Length: 319
Ligand SMILES: Nc1nc2c(c(=O)[nH]1)N[C@H]1C(S)=C(S)[C@@H](COP(=O)(O)O)O[C@H]1N2
Ligand SMILES: [Mo]
Image (cartoon, rainbow, N blue to C red; front, side, top):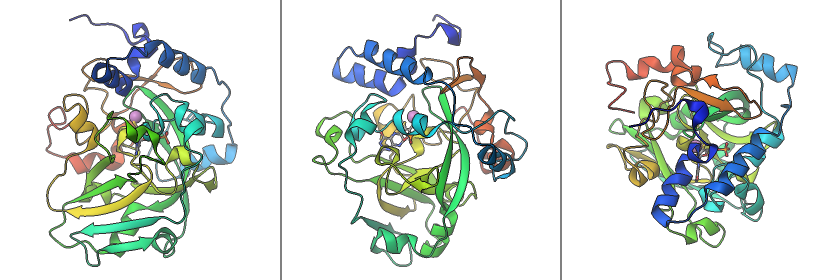
């Protein structure tokens, strides 16, 4: 086995999900991805707002872990460099292809071990809640990161209102299945619809969030409108976009990326610099808009707040 320094890894190889695809579909696409990656990192100066940076330090993610220079990425960065395979596998595809997704009317199904299962219009689903702004670090398993100012509702407030039964131990989120609106679903690149899940106690953590907007505006389609999950201490693939179903379960469900490549994407998906991806190190990351690499922080810098959820667990086995 050849051990390489992170700087030696070509950007095409950092695009993990794309490599998985390349293996499965036998298409050579590394050149294009490399170009997209370099292009995005060259976007340059971030749209720093002093107020936003201060909010980041004083906000719920402020337990000493936020470096002082952790400022939000620009709106342009956040909305033009995306992973959303329903609209294509290149970082620019979601912005280019998601414009025609209809996000109203939109129905959210609440299912499983919960007091009142049923289907509800999204605006009624959101109505009981006041929107909050949260600035969170985002760490993709592909070893890039951003800082994103979200708007939305704490997931635990939603769960508390829905009243899961005592037997509920997991919460599963499912993306819309509609190959006509989501052309990426016409290809077998993943088992559609996209799903992921959390243990109920993870979902009840105050940092877990359901986003309906970013930068104070409603969520752009490429970022997961009208409703998407945000779990800042986990790799980005946990952040299910365009949610149509929230199900409460008594057993751990299968999750899309774990099914696709179980040795690469675990159920827990906790950011852990000590557990390498089989094909590259996870110890460092490139913040979009920067050239130098940063050290990746345990639980993406939220360890002081979330580590207790995993006490006594072997974090190498449960990766
Ligand atoms: N439905 C769906 N949700 C998804 C994905 C996807 O392909 N489909 N990609 C995930 C991955 S790998 C990441 S890193 C984040 C990216 O979110 P962003 O584009 O808003 O930064 O979305 C996650 N949610
Ligand atoms: Mo990701």
